[in-house]
Structure formats: C-alpha cells, structure tokens
Length: 73
Image (tube, rainbow, N blue to C red; front, side, top):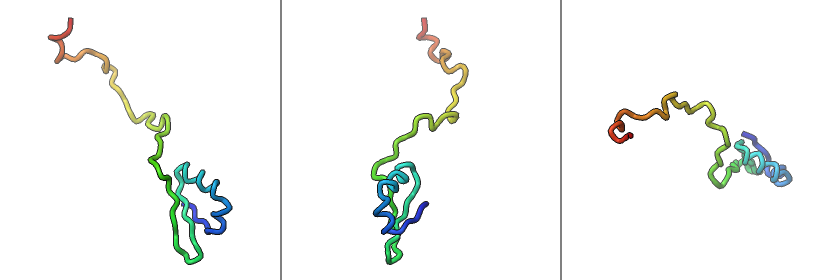
C-alpha cells in the first residue's frame, strides 16, 4: 500500500490511477492527517490464465457413464 501526500497526488494522478488499476492500494493523506483510499469503481476483470494449474480433469472424463448404458446404441 502506497501512501502519498495530497499535494504530490494532484500532480501524479494519472500514474496513481495506473497503480490502482493494477491492484495496488493507494492512500492519499491530507494536511490534517486524514487518509483516503483510492479503489477501482468496477469489479476487477479476471486475467486470462489466472487459474492455470488449479483445475484438473480425470483421464476418463469423456468415457461413457454406466448409468446411461440403457440409452446408448
């Protein structure tokens, strides 16, 4: 989580928005010491391939099921 003073944040806003869109949190501190967090407005979009290696299928996934033997030719 990055913390930045409000006067510096105003000049670096496009850069800070890019940081937030990549998933990192940014906190802006004003002169009174109050903190404000910048967060994305919408739901994050899933990244392609992010579940790689988490899902496994058995070798016989496509094999006919015994329960449906009566319905098969």
